[in-house]
Length: 268
Length: 72
Image 1 (cartoon, chains in turn brown, orange):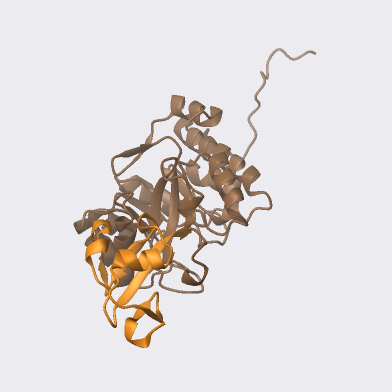
Image 2 (cartoon, helix red, strand yellow):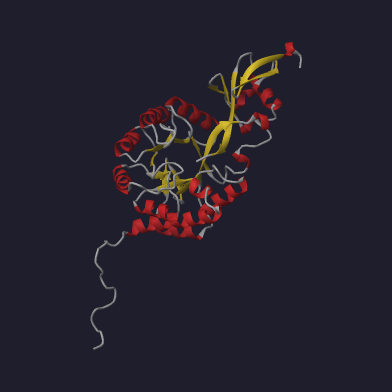
């Protein structure tokens, strides 16, 4: 990828490896809610993301001239991660995942089983059930989940190739509401931890990466920005900045000042 | 369309009349859909792409034609 920020990151950081596939960018982006397909593609390119999520839906037969998203998004340019968004049962999620795999691109699925319409919080029991079924069928499951350690551990045991706790509710833009739990999930899991949902702006993305997680997945923060392309540039920098700050190890914080200049050698 | 020459199917959740004797491939052609651009589920079973030409559409079939759209 001819991109200075990501080249710099590559020199200072290892790749993100999910289910045996290597990515330079630690930013995964969605393709929903953009004003136009042109803006969507330009924003995704500006973000530097290599993995992009898509949803599975019925072809609109009344307007069958309207092409699916792959008419706009080149599957040779991006790694497609199909989601099971909108599913409220394990059975439905498994059905959508199978349909997505039959499209013939890869075995990856972003598993999402929603438990509540108002908060879009995940049904973790149904998510676990679907994760087991899909992993047994050879899927590489990246599971959207709550910021709950026990569920995250169970999802890893179920065979998920990545566990994706939320920063805050989907589309809320509230940022990471429980950095302690996110850190603890990252400390305890061996598979990559990707924070999925809730990031609102660049500082949120940076703070999320500073918790030590492996990546961030976002959609609305880009699509609903006044200028999605400019925000995508900002997010690319923020993800790299947060990652490098985490790897660098921050200074200890203190509640009193410590001078940066010598206290000796002052004039009389 | 000749009443005797059609059958009723559930297509993407809606009842629809289609020509009798169509294969899935011919149905997609009639709908002007590229076989490579959709996934076909017939009565809850996903069809392999290379089988479309050999599977007939029958009276009462539930057919789902899906594809990828924007999503997060």
